[in-house]
Length: 162
Image (cartoon, rainbow, N blue to C red):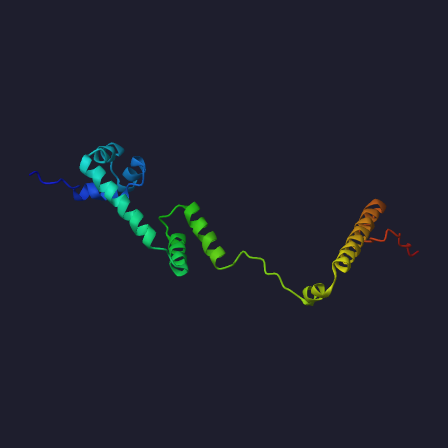
């Protein structure tokens, strides 16, 4: 019976770095893309890749990274000078998000508690009153701009001291 062939050490290195693009793999390893393609067409190398993929899929379904592991990965990627700048920036963003750096902190106050005690009609009236106030301020700002005196929202001209 013939001995089953397996990839050589060099072929395994190529196959372990291969992520679907022979040219990228060749650049990473400093070899020609043609040689990578030759390796990829060998039956025992194809079998090795299939086994590797099946193992990765079964392993992936069993392992879920913890929050700490993800943060460590993002940190390592962020400080890795070999990683592309876009990968490093993305890792930085994900790390910041996981730490809550970009969330807006809303401060709840006694107004929230007061609103809980109001009826729907009372809340609607307060909204209406606030909108009227906002519209009034806008009207004053427009009048001030028209009068050429943006510092005086009332629109009244100051008397010159003379």
